[in-house]
Amino acid sequence: MSRRVVVLGTGGTIASRRDERGAAAPTDAVAALLTGLDLGDVEVVARDLLAKDSSALTPADQALIVREVQVALGDPTVVGVVVTHGTDTAEETAYLLDLVHRDERPVVLTGAQRPADAPDADGPGNLTDALRVASDPAARGLGVLVVFDGFVLAARGTRKVHTHEVTAFAQPDSGPLGRVEGGRLVVDGQPAHREHPPVDLAGLASIRVDIAAVYPGVDGTALAAFAAAGARGVVLVATGAGNANPAIVRAVEDLTRAGVVVGLTTRVDAGPVFAGYGGGGGGADLIDAGAVPLGTLRAGQGRILLLALLASYDDAAAVRAAVPTFVG
Ligand code: ASP
Image (cartoon, rainbow, N blue to C red):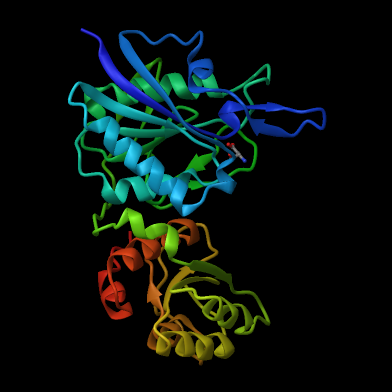
C-alpha cells in the first residue's frame, strides 16, 4: 500500500534558478522539484504555497505555512508532511511549526544550499530523504524535523551553521536525532525538549518583536528605538553566558517598566544563558532588570517564542511566566 505524503512548497534555493548575475531566486513549483526522484511507494500530493526566499518571509507567511500543514494533516490518509523551504530562516518556521504540532505524524522541512540549476544540486537528495523520513513510522512522535544532507534534526535548537556548504544545519546543543543512511532512516535520539504553549496564529502578524545585538561599547539606543516603534518584545543577543553592560541593563529596566518583554540569548554557538556574572552589566544584572533568559534558544527561535506568547497573552507578566525554563 502506498503511503501518502503532502509536499508544500514555499520557495528557497531548492526551488531557485540563477539569473545573468548568478543570483538565485525561486522559480520552480513543487512538481518540478519532484521530477525524476525515486519516490518508492510514497504517493506525493504537491501543493505550492509561496515562492519566496526565506529571508523575505513574514510572520503572516509563517502562520500560513503552519495553517497549511494543519490542513494537510486534517486528512487521516496522510502519513506525513514535507515543507520545502529556504535555509536562511528554516529554523524559525520549523520551531513555530513544532510549537503547535501535537500530532504523531512527522512534519519535515528541507531545502538546498545549491540552486536547482546547479549541476551538483543538493535539493533532489534532500527532498528524497525528507520524503523517506516523512513516510517512515520510525519518525512518528519526533515532532517537526529538519532533514538536510543526511542528518535528521529536531526543530528546537537547530540552526543554520554554514552559508553555502551542503551541511547547512546543526543542533549545537544536543546533536542530530538520526540520519538517512542508504535511503533508510536511522533514529538514535529523541528531541531534548519540546513545548506547546497556546499560539494564536492570527495574532502573529500584528505583533512586533525585534532583535538587538550586544557588542563592546553598545548603548541602549536600539532597545529604546524598538520600544518606540511599538515592539512588544525584544530579543537581546548578549555576549558569552548572557552578559552586556550597565547601559544595556538600564535600557532593559526601562523596557520592562514599559511592559516590553526582553528575552535574553547569546551570540555564542552553544550552551544556555545563565545568571553567572554581575558587576552592573552581567547576566545576573540583566535578569534582575527584567530580562527573561531563553535557555538554549538563539535569536531566531527565541523571537518566534516571544511572538507566539505575545500573540496569546495580553500582559507581559504572563508572557514572562510562560517562557520555558528548559536550559538544555
Ligand atoms: N536565501 C535562501 C533562502 O533562504 C537560501 C537557501 O534556501 O538556501 O531562501
